[in-house]
Length: 316
Ligand code: CP
Image 1 (cartoon, rainbow, N blue to C red):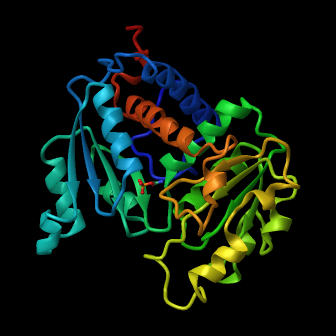
Image 2 (cartoon, helix red, strand yellow; image 1 turned 180 degrees about the horizontal axis):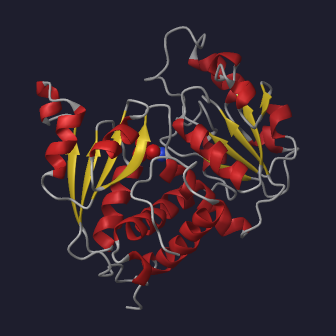
């Protein structure tokens, strides 16, 4: 496939064929990551800036590891310790970074739309590592890829439940777009205060009772309470939330056999998901992390390898 995109900002801009191509390419990198020597020379001479203006463990580390395993050089900038703290604007920050001639900037920022904003000003590729409530496309791709490793290519007719703080979640928005495109039926379950105001326009069934929501589902994605994005008063208290919405084994008695359990992390055990379930045999939470490195290797390869139409992953 001739990869023509400059930037990865959201799921909407990817066709179903492109999503499947990302999954196929990621499978190659799962194999490479299982070798004793995990480094391949595909992106030798390329450089990637990891600009994370919000905290991250999984996304930042896996992009860093992905770049290094492809032999690209990676450089990190956090807002703390950068000249953003001296009042430099986002636009001036990224123009300054681009003047150092990276091939891509991977950015996480609290402002929805910030990745699209910088992409319009930059010639290098921009990969969105999460912008406000808007999108987290690489998380959705790794979630889809993780399930494809269990289910194969056939997502048609599968029912997925996304549970928790939907209103403030960029993961929910990107996952819903991805899994709808793959042919899944989507449910969401949350307290009324954590359901987005424009929910009528979303292709989902809405539940407020977790037992009802889990009936016959094939996978559940539990989400973190995004307390840093919530205005006060949306929840009476965390304990009351966990009594009604903390996913436990008892909720899954009427789910489909072999129902898969996922969480993008970081998780609050005992608040969004019970510890036993997070560590159970049907939990894919650490598989998601493993998939994250492979998917981000696939994305860096597709967006940065040149000339795109001639590149094959070398057999080394
Ligand atoms: N899922 C996710 O984005 O995790 P981090 O915040 O640790 O990157």
